[in-house]
Image 1 (cartoon, one colour):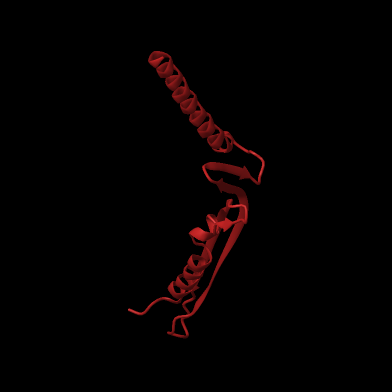
Image 2 (cartoon, rainbow, N blue to C red):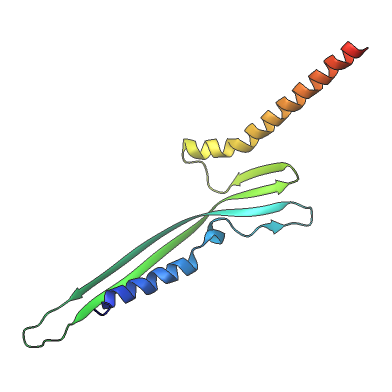
Length: 135
């Protein structure tokens, strides 16, 4: 059984989409600045795919007729920039916040900084108590 023409059209279209959208489209290539900061662009990728086809049988001819088409659309929107400088990591959002999930993601770096400071404070308090005990 031979391949139907619509299968060929769909296969080529899907292959082209795979070539255009990969992980580097969503998480961009890291950029290292002269100051030692690494900048990583983050994007939102949306794509759609459509295909169609039809055979039109004709009583006067016995050969198969075919009409079909295929198409795709891609939207790439930059949404954030991740900056890494030593142990300092920040997420700088390009778009304004739209949902509580966006707000929660934005708060993660600050939350991590606060936890680090609590551990540092706790370590300093423990060291101070230990010095009092030893003196």
